[in-house]
Image 1 (tube, helix red, strand yellow):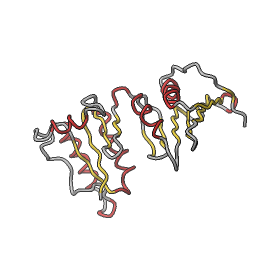
Image 2 (cartoon, helix red, strand yellow):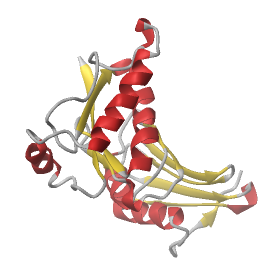
Image 3 (tube, rainbow, N blue to C red):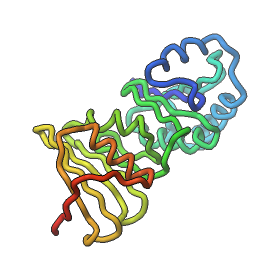
Image 4 (cartoon, one colour):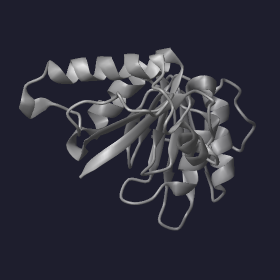
Amino acid sequence: MNYDHLLLPSRAATIADVDDYLSAQQGQPESDVVAELAAELNKRNAELPEADTFLGTDTVGGAPSGTVLHVSCPYDAIGFVRNLLFELATPRDYALYDPQLAWLFDPADRVEVAVTHGGAGEFPYLTEALVAQWVPELADPNPFLIAERAPEHYIQTYRAANGEYTVEYRDGSAASHFGLETADPAEVSDLIWAWATGSPRAAHWSRVQF
C-alpha cells in the first residue's frame, strides 16, 4: 500500500474545490511543467539502488492528467518524498496536496519558517490556511506545533488532553521567552500566524520562568 501526493499549480484550487479541479484535469494533455517534474523525479529515482528507490510505481508522469502530477511512495519514504516534492515544486510555483490528510500546501502566501508538526514531521513553510487547519486538529500522541525563524527565535504550542493550549514564543534568549494558555484554537492560530508574518498580536503574555 502506498501513500499519495498530488502536485498542482499554485492557487489552482482550495481545499473546498480541489477535488473538482483534479477531476477537471483528467483526460487533459500533460502540461510541460508536469512533464518536467516527472522527468526529474524519475531521474532521481533511477539513480538509486533498487532497495533505496522512493517511488511507489516504476515511473511517474505520462498520463493525461493536465496540470496535475500524481506521485505515490512507500510509507517509509513519505518524509523523503515530501521534502523532494517541496524542493522541486515550490520554485515552479506548484502546490502540494496530501489527499490522505486533506492538507494543501500552496506556496503563494507562504512564510518560509521551519515548521515541525508533532504528528506529521517537518515542513519548509507555513501558510495562514495551514495553521488554521492544523491547530484545532492537534492530537495525541504528539499534539504540538513549532515554527522557527532562526535558532532561539520560535513560537510553539502544545494541546493538553483537556483541550487547553499552551503557547510560547522565544525571541533570542531565555530572558525573552513568553507564554500564555487558552482554550481557543482560533486565538492560537492567529498568534502563530502573526508571529510568522512579523506582526505580533497583542496578547496577555507572561514571562516563562526557567
